[in-house]
Length: 253
Image: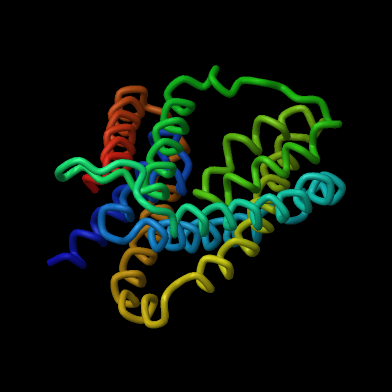
């Protein structure tokens, strides 16, 4: 029964990205966090994220701006390494607060806060509505990659810095996908290296079900409609993400 719930939740969540405006990774992380430990949930979300981006890269590779990938993507790799490093430190930290059933662990607390913050940026885009000049590509790549490695939240920050890179619409999308892949290819092996022996095999069936369902949901959604942002759905999803973030912060989830 648990596998059925995981499959339906992953498929529905992935499909919701097509009508809510939220990124795939942003929505999938809280869903997977309901069923898996937070580090495994981050790794699982990264797998779906990289599969989705490989698919998109196959369609858009000819529009990639190599110079922008170099100036933004290489610092992004370094940032991802630093982000996973902080993930490791937080994961081994002692609780920040304990009182009854509430236990604030460092890693879930930080991920919960990031979920709340990025949910708010999706609901209120002006929070991150800054247009940086091209000279900020290197620090922008470092910052975006850092949060990509820490929690997987990299899209909003990447867009904030790339929007002024002077790229065409096609190049902007394709270059963003290429940069995301660099971060994904850096962080995923590091995630797996941190997993205790046997963890991945112990959850292999659930992981396969979740990733397959999520990927299927994205494919079905793309075939059914163009991306439509429905404000009521967006607000509902955003509120649920904020509540899940609070739950993670307080150790309830």
